[in-house]
Length: 318
Image (cartoon, rainbow, N blue to C red; front, side):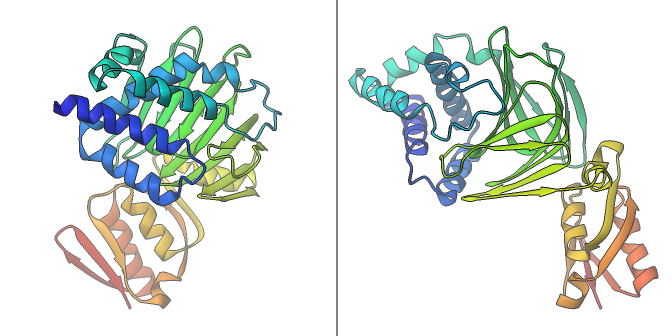
């Protein structure tokens, strides 16, 4: 068996496993590790995933109405049918041909930002996406579908209104469906945060553990595993969350531990906070994400904290 065929078989097995009700956050972490291990793994997985979605027309099977409360995932039987088809094909090479002969996969465009970088991209439907630091995103937008896969990181979406083509963001176990609105999605492993700036969005749990959540302006969804917390934020709080779009990090009585974690998303030089009292200190203000050295100096000047720099690490303590 060639390496390419073995990779295709493994990708198909992951796709089938992911459709099972017992799929867990640990399983997702294992899948993410396999995808990150080799670019060929990602290519095989994305090709099979997108090819089958096009065959089964998941976008058409899902209700385009934002207010829908259908809680079951529509591909359950479709994937079982796919398993039977794949099993009947003579070898993985034939399975490879089935999906690679479709040119739809190659309509995917991948966008990626480095640590500390930002980028704005325009899609051919009139929508725009702003990518934050260390983000990887794929988009497939054509006359029939508008699908985006957020592999990691954070993105802000301004979606052009089109009732005939719901705009769907896939982020781990969650799918975010809209017709036209403004919102952001942040994915870190199995954790997904959705902040709505304008309009309404529907957040579905891919494993059907929860009914879909309909959220509107000011709502924030914090999702991980079986948990799905919805909180309402003021306009100012939402602006603070999205301050990265103006090239700033804003904190309003955030703990120093949380602030350090946020800075670490934008820099290779890491902040390390030691001591429970220091970690729970509350801070506020606006800072440049890339100027971690200045932030550390301010902590020393304002709070008398001890700052020790060692290579790409800044240790903060009492």
